[in-house]
Length: 91
Image 1 (cartoon, rainbow, N blue to C red):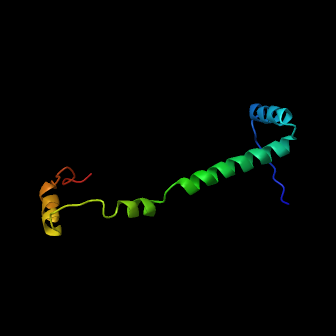
Image 2: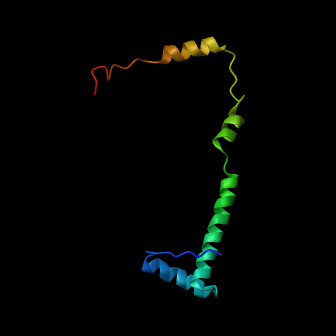
Image 3: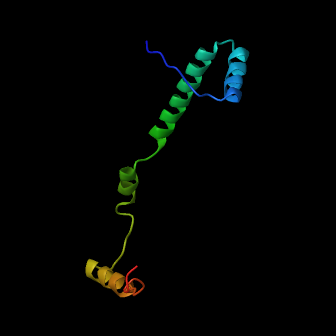
């Protein structure tokens, strides 16, 4: 089993963890392990519940219906674009 040493912990945080450990009948090291395990379990559940970008895109695919063909859509986009002369003189 590995060992972990935590350096530079603020006194107020250590005292809070020490109080939590005493209230739950644990040593400080046991309380730290409990908190880490609890955090990782919650984080793991939220990561599993979070959809990936690919999943979101796949869910969106096919959801946009338009009677225009690709050429008409491209023409509309090109017509809506405006050329900017803001940087024509450089930075």
